[in-house]
Image (cartoon, rainbow, N blue to C red; front, side):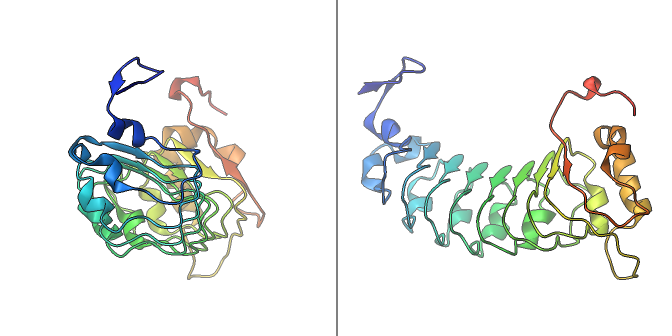
Length: 246
């Protein structure tokens, strides 16, 4: 048994092993959790040198609610992650992932927080954006060029980070994101087009702004809709009552 320096709680070896960041580990050894696997809710193997994840991780640690694998060298994830029916938080940021497993479509039906920032994905499954369970999505520096027009009227997204991508258009359904309090579009180059095939219209985006109290207050700081220009938007989460009208 070991004692946690933060809480002075006595931890079994399995729980000690569940937080194994900054240890230059190249693999996750599931036998570390034997006889305690059903008790492991949080697994943190961030800042290691992992190149793969055990295929049976998802079925072995059935009680996982949070999985952190950021800052590794992962190129793929094995199928089966949707079997983690209790998973609510997943951090895959700063890896080398070029695609996400097909069963992500089932995972995002219950996942609440997803961080896939800084992966060369270039495209993301539409199910991520259409999810009505996700509350926080971090997808900055993923190389995506467009957003699918699938944002639900019942979206629960309060945080959406899409900074430093190649997005130049917002789909009309973007105006459905009325719950947002933290929107990061810093470094995104915006070009307002006048053809009939594009994106959200100026009135549509205005409607989005006015549907969201936070965004309404910074409208004049966002852009001039009548001028083609390059714009960076960075909205930080602050208390709503801290804002004043502009």
